[in-house]
Image (cartoon, rainbow, N blue to C red; front, side, top):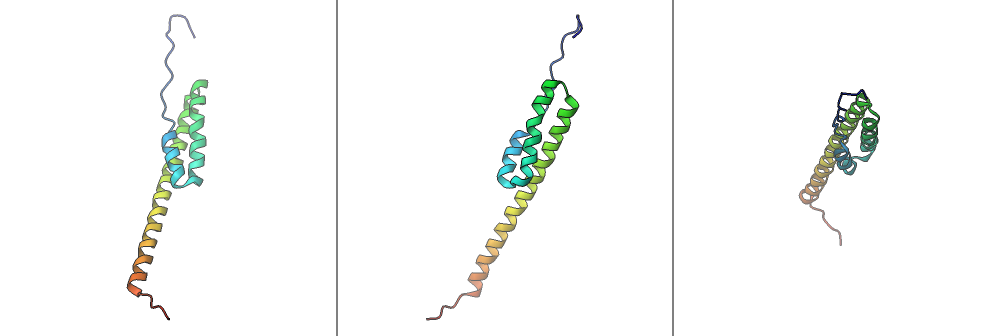
Length: 98
């Protein structure tokens, strides 16, 4: 630090940890890289590597979004299959043999 120049406060970069943790409940295989990248952001900021922190935050956001998308689609597919299975059993009317 040079005398006469005030030290600049570190940049605030969102590490997307909250979105990564929510994503782990929807589709954990893609949420794990999101959490790993989110955990890298704050140490990189403390080291002064703002470009690296931005890159880690962007990767975390990307993996979180994919986990959320895949998880929501997967849940929608399961709900639709369950609904159609239930409707098929009601319409088909199972006849029991005695």
